[in-house]
Each structure stands twice: as structure tokens, then as C-alpha cells.
Image 1 (cartoon, one colour):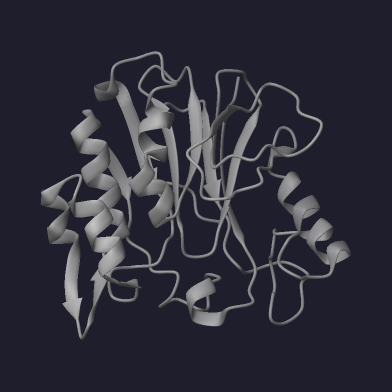
Image 2 (spheres, one colour; image 1 turned 90 degrees about the vertical axis):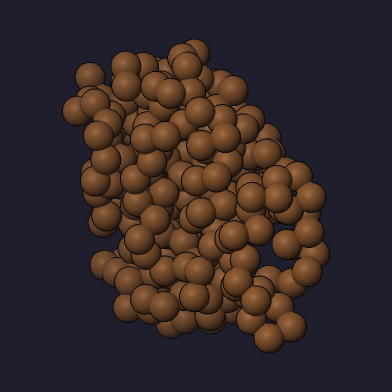
Length: 239
């Protein structure tokens, strides 16, 4: 487990899993939490049960489809919501997103009255998943605290002209996040997220030091391995 190093209130609890310490077999070894990737479902449920021992309640899993939809995790749903972020203002409701290169973003505020978890691939990031999540907070953006979890790093995230153009047509200062690499570019998804947050008035941003692609001993990476498992990043309000 990775425990965020960030200045959140003490009753705000958060963690991010790694690939280590579960029951799944190759190529999902070993702590895969995704039911949708082709792993043995019994093994995944064992992994989820192991995670549940650290949580006050079952995580609110989402069906992530690179949308900009944000849901209230405290509202009980019959099926996993099609969404890429969730928030809660209720104690012991666990917001959760799964990733394997995309950027997990955990948020709270200085008052410790709300938490949120975001799955930010480049599409969702470009389309406004951060902006939609920030809009759910009942406070000033300057009161929001953010942790950027493990994602693909700027030395490995290769993209084409289409991605560069989609970001830079909206904000030309995002050009700095793309380094030419042959006929393509290396993109810094961490800095793209920081830019978005800072433009909204959020400045208390931690994390962003890992690369899922370059650390196979710790993290799953879809770009590196193709068929692979998923990590989870989770956040909740304790009493």
C-alpha cells in the first residue's frame, strides 16, 4: 500500500494499492483488483477481501469509461455507475478508482468535509473530469488539497499529434507538457493535471513521483504489458 504524503486533515484516510501482495496468477500477479481484465474472478474477490480489511466499508466501484461523469458515492446504486469520479460528504463511504497507467487523483478540503477520487486518462483530463469534480466541492478551490497517485510517467507516455492538439487548442501553456520524440511526443500527464488544477485555483498538490510503466515490480501498466491487472486508489472520511 502507498499512503499519500499530503497535508490532509487526520480524519481523511486514503491509500493506493500496488500490484504486490495478492492471490492472482500471471499475468495478473498478484494483487489485481479489476474484475474486467480476464483474471480469475475468485482470485480477484480474494484480493478485494484482503483490501476490505483496511476499509470501513466496501469501496464504491465504478464502471470507468473515460467519461467526465462524477457521482455521489453515498447514494446507493444497484449497479456500478458509469462514471470516472466519485465524491462523498458522508463518513465511511469509500470513493475508489482503478488504474494501470491512467492518473488517479484523490481530493479533500482543508475542512475535511468532503473527499473525491478521480480516474484521469488523457481523454477525461482533456474533456474536463477534474473541473467537474472540483465543481462538487462546497468550498473555494484554494481550500482543496490534492494527491496525484501512481501513473505513467513523462519518460514513457508516448502520444500523437491528436493528443497534443486537443490539449493545446484549449490552453497553449500545455505545450510545455509535450516533448518531441521522433514523430510523436512524450506527454507529462502529471503536469497536465497540475496545470488544470492550478488554473482552477487549486495549488496544494502533492504526489506525482512514480511511473507505472518504469516500475514493473510495483505497478501494473497497460501500455507496458497489454493484458494486466488494476490498482485501486481510495479515500474516505473517518470519524
